[in-house]
Image (cartoon, rainbow, N blue to C red; front, top):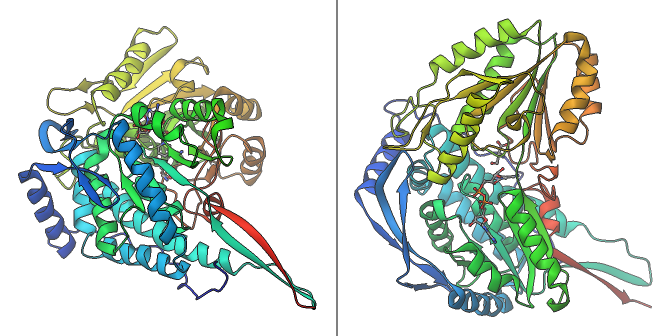
Length: 530
Ligand SMILES: NC(=O)c1ccc[n+]([C@@H]2O[C@H](COP(=O)([O-])OP(=O)(O)OC[C@H]3O[C@@H](n4cnc5c(N)ncnc54)[C@H](O)[C@@H]3O)[C@@H](O)[C@H]2O)c1
Ligand SMILES: N[C@@H](CCC=O)C(=O)O
């Protein structure tokens, strides 16, 4: 039972390091990049703390140099999924009874390691395996990963301290039980920190977890798993199951003790999981908690009072950082006709400065997209714009997949507000611009609200406070994270709790008290004192 509350330190975000030439962090990171590239490691499945080599392997590669193999991972299949369920249920018996402060201590220790001696390893793995620049890796694999762990500890401490009122003749308590069963965590490729938190958030609450990393990010997910081990996480609390998603999930979702799914990824996959769970609802011991943060078609609405240079900068960063592979990436924008010439000039100047290529070179701004499938998908959208009569490419459009999966920062201008690239998630560096008559601002807000089925992030750029107010109201349900005069990416843990509704997910705000509540099942206890 978890009633009493030792205080966790007030939360402070992990500072982002600068990596200036000659700085100790830069030297250490470069050394780690060289070391990792020179190896070819073998990554096992890990169940109940034991390494399993299934012999069915796949390669971990670098997207910006896809012939370079960083390692091979063993794939879990049905048998390993069954073993992992058994291990998680066994580990749960002791883990859930551990005083919460002891559980929290392990994750606070992991945060200390990640902020210190493991920082270069986490960043280098993320740069190489997911093609992030040092800057994008640092805000993800170092800072956000650390922030998630420390903020969860902070929120959990406040949560446990929240107890009901008691009368003179009765003492009332809330026992914050973990869920009965195990949790299935399914991670996307694009954020090392998200993959970490998908497992860590349920685990810190006393649950045990089966973690399925994305196949294109197994290498860095494995480094995170080793971090937990180094921090002293007991065997079986998090079980590491890279492998074929549908094979593994069929076994896991079909088990009676499956008590929750913690998912981040595409809307389509989450819908499949939800339908599978729904279709076998009678077989579970409890209603499984389904938490899924999914896709987006994030907007930037510009008002005629906006500052064109601020808009252009926001668009360039929002659309092209990490090759547009953030779920929050700006991918459609509505610009008033009067302001477009200035915005366009400033945007083209921003794009001209963008350096694409090897992320190990420190002034590179964009690396490669994650894999061939994604590369071809993005190319398909660019081709659609090239073929269309109501759209044209005004910047970029080039793709080259020989060495790495490189796509130029691409801007499409369309006369059709429902053109396919204004509506569908592309998950690549492609921004579509629609121009509107200045006086049609309110209609444009309506158009923006109704154009996409998603509701993840969005920005309004304006200097007129009434325009901001109009947008704020008209776009209330269009985005779970709404930004004013700044790009719609880059939410910081503890500052802008992240997540969206509509088809962007269940909006349980990753890295927040709201998310932790989903992994707890409170028990109310009344003790008679009379
Ligand atoms: N809203 C958010 O917070 C957020 C954050 C990051 C990424 N995303 C979204 O994630 C997507 C990109 O990531 P991705 O390409 O890794 O997504 P994805 O949906 O292709 O894969 C996500 C995970 O689901 C697994 N998976 C695939 N099929 C499955 C099945 N049938 N059953 C169970 N698991 C299955 C994959 O192996 C992977 O581990 C984008 O749509 C992006 O918007 C959303
Ligand atoms: N939290 C990140 C996006 C995570 C999704 O990929 C941001 O706000 O940019």
